[in-house]
Amino acid sequence: MTEPRRLMLVHAHPDDEVTSTAITMAHHVGLGDRVTLVTCTLGEEGDIVVDDLKNLRSEDPDALGRHRIGELTEAMRVLGVTDFVRLGGDGKYRDSGMAVDEQGRVIPVPDATGNTFWSADLTEAATDLAVLIRDRRPQVLITYDQYGSYGHPDHIQAHRVAMYGSQLAAVPSYRPDLGEAWAVPRMLWTAMAESGFREGLRRMQEAGRDWPWGDYDPAGPLPPMVTPDSAIAVEVFDPERGEQKLQAFRAHASQIPTDFFLYQLSDTLGPGVLTRESYRFAGGVPVPKGAKDIFSGL
Image: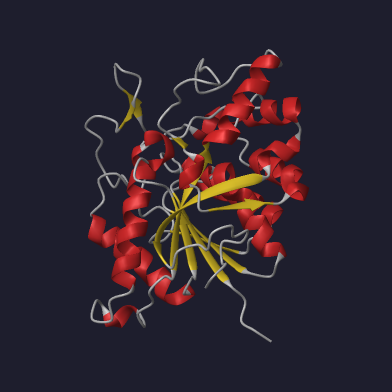
């Protein structure tokens, strides 16, 4: 018998894990691999889209965060993930929220105070992750790119923490009291492949449905969150798990509205449209050309 392969994912808030990595998580759980999810905040500043839950935005600033732990737990049950933790423990780093500038770009909330993740000490947060890396010893670690996918400050900070934390975890002389050093063999960044984006945009327009990222021409310039196909190193494709991903989205009911664009996309194009997740190579052992598995070559 061989040891199970080990995957770690670093996400900013509850529900982020479903958008870009739900298929990957469920797929590898199904293969018998060990999957660890690290969520950096409790999403305390997220929107509440269900009227019956509006009371969670109460005088208790932690009420929504506690509720979202329950939603995350249900989403993980749906995906089959049993190892899911919060960076530094529940509530150590608070959701930073986000604002939008005059150009429509996502920016940090001005004058944010307290223990927001965006304002956290990078070495401290990276060390919290290094502890988990040394303990779980993942062979593949997945997080966002340097723009945090679409610019949310907590996504950018999660990227920084994941990249720096993996470096600290690999240094034997750095905090040896925190466990034996572990160098993550491969780092991957989530990505939205250009070909899939253009095809989805084209088909949604043909169906007369709105596209959430603006009125783009399927043959024209695209937003910066889209990655050229040439930069995609590997994809996870599991066409049988589309409904499982949708169920995981539904678990995050306080945050994800019933008219969420991915529900519309699935209704229009079928749940199979959600079952391909793309990744860029970000460090360590390169992904072999043509690989169909994120662990290929390790």
